[in-house]
Image 1: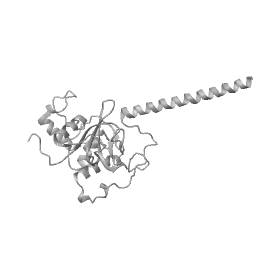
Image 2: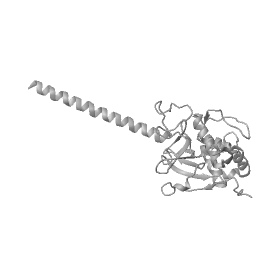
Image 3: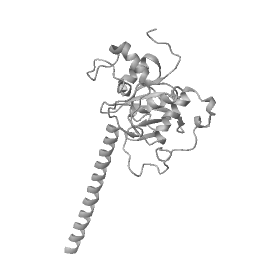
Image 4: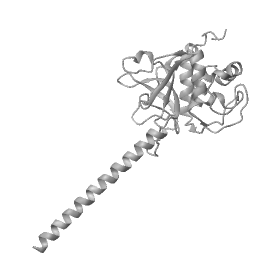
Length: 254
């Protein structure tokens, strides 16, 4: 009789241990997911690819993309924007949004470091488009039209172009605003487009649409929320902006 009671007690203890372990694992997974959603990206050592030349999400095809097979003399502005963004992935640029005093025009923050907006800036600069200069010149003319969030009395060419709200304002004035919907509108999402998101905690984020697509047609995105990556994340957060910069668009103030 005592042996039976002892066996039952052991079984109960084991079941309680298993149940407790399951709950702890679930809590850890939920906590990790919340961090992912709040901070945009969690990168573990296991997720960092071993190939030093590329930094894709695990399982994605690293073979030459459609644009990478186009002869150099035939590359368009959109192609060059995409390739400039992908260079950030190959450089394994680490996220750093710190303020830096940089040269003007053509200034850039320290190599190997940069914010999400620096992916866009460097991508455009690869196509000969200097967002630092363009945004600064427009802010000098129309400072009152830009967000007044930072207590500045005038433009600052060191940081203005690196702020998401300023980029969005510039693109609303000078670029083609496109759909925010993905389902049923895949043809409107072209490589070289700029996408803006809002994280659940209210912070803004941005990236460049890739020429690589999933089997369902949804394009990958090149962005930096910890380290520059090219991955399936277009639908990960709320999409707040989608722009295509056309170099020959007229100045709205002209």
